[in-house]
Length: 127
Ligand code: SF4
Image (cartoon, rainbow, N blue to C red; front, side, top):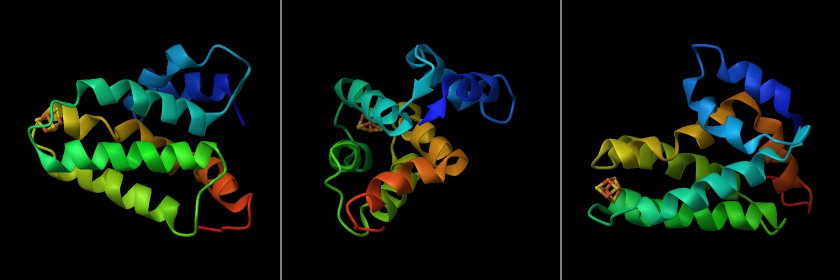
């Protein structure tokens, strides 16, 4: 859990403009960042038009991996797979929408890696 004020403060810095997308989700004092990101990716899914495979397939895989993570059902290597996949979707998607979908996930992982690692390690499946 991280303080919502931390996210809000970082969102105001020019280095992390992507975090502004998370501020509306930060209503409580403590933020379950992985759940917030999972909900965010869920909200992106209806906007995937399906024209290109990196976004169409990648976003579903990322969504599934996040759902497993939130339910403490991750297996070894899931975290690395998800981050690698998110980087690929960001790089290879056809349009700016698809390229932007994984950016909050990648930014949050960069800033708060322990939030993700804590979940994947909680059942002894250290990623
Ligand atoms: S990247 Fe753009 S074109 Fe490709 S599936 Fe996603 S929304 Fe459609």
